[in-house]
Length: 189
Image (cartoon, rainbow, N blue to C red; front, side, top):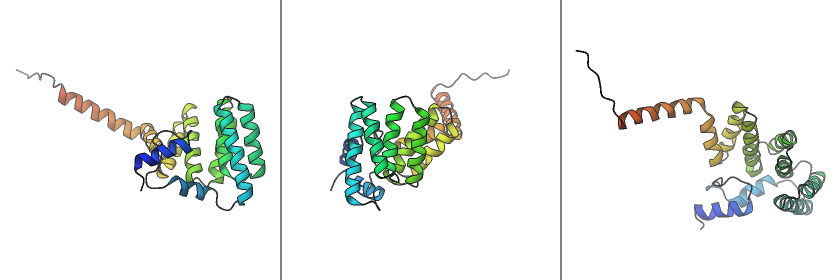
């Protein structure tokens, strides 16, 4: 039986683009991946996964043109599989094409029905891009959906973007500060 730490290490190895600490300790990565790949013909799926792996490897090596070439081929072979859009969004973002990345993430969320490993990763990525665009309400909605799918990273982001939580945190900080540093009370004489 594997521990939560073991699953987190495996998550980091098999999904290096996933934020650290984003492994769901209650769901094994194998189950999530199987859920994302249901309904696809096995031979075609194997070919597409190999193209995606080549694309991710090329992107990690800095060759974004090769990465996009491989990911575009994967999308042509299985245009209804969300994972390649999610991965291509990373390459587009690295290329500086935020609009293209957002469009691919929208497709990844739609195709995955906003569920499973790919849906969770796409929601987190889209939330980060929306946050950078100062669209905090939209970003918070994506983070909340990803948090509901088990993303600890998204949960922290959603809390940070919640105006009520921020107000409560600020008030709590002030109260604790006052308790630790009581002011000298002035009495009226």
